Length: 293
Image 1 (tube, rainbow, N blue to C red):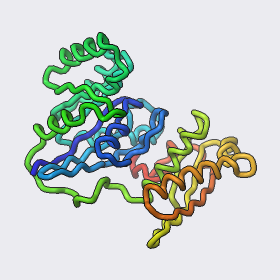
Image 2 (tube, helix red, strand yellow; image 1 turned 180 degrees about the vertical axis):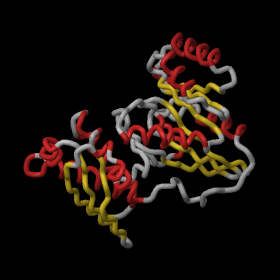
Image 3 (cartoon, one colour; image 1 turned 60 degrees about the vertical axis):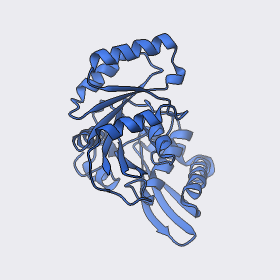
Image 4 (cartoon, rainbow, N blue to C red; image 1 turned 120 degrees about the horizontal axis):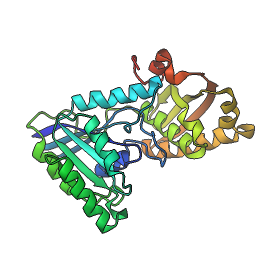
């Protein structure tokens, strides 16, 4: 059997999580139009006869000073050091070829590199040709594949390229396993996705979600979670008039989780202010972002 770990890299909004979910035909990472949606590495597992690909979806490459962003950068570094292959996703709808080149080179990738030119369906032919020529020149040892994560285009080429690089190895996960994360983690991420969807740009990026209680029974799940924000003035905005915004977030999250868990979900949200949580190592650890941000 061929098996191993493939780290997914790229700048914010390149389509990393969209690619992973589409490739697996399952939702593993949350996807929103906003940058920095993914905050920590998530493993998504692809199973096929004699082939197991463990994709590691990482946060977008981003230069932030707070402890949270340092932790995200560390996640990228650790994931890369443990990978067999690096899959770097380029947003083909953007023309910043030099910026992408600097980002790739800054990673000092020590394993075989596959560059995915994503959103090829949004590119004009001359732009696509120019991009391919540029990356072929800058990274002559890399494989370059055109894909569209939204339209599932080019996935077979990606799979075969990965297969060609993967070593012979054991099966790391059971056949039915699609991610290394548990349901409480998935609930936290769905709630955070709804905050990103419904709140203004600044607020959700300064929020974190902690699942205080997750109780699963045969046909039901009960979840109590707390949304932490950095500023007192954001609390009433997240709660909303007469609790309207919190109810909106809770209802949308509950509906998605019921679809994902195939069970009735009860979701109770609290909102608290935790000034400076993104730079507080103790609170970062409590929120699930590591012990040494």
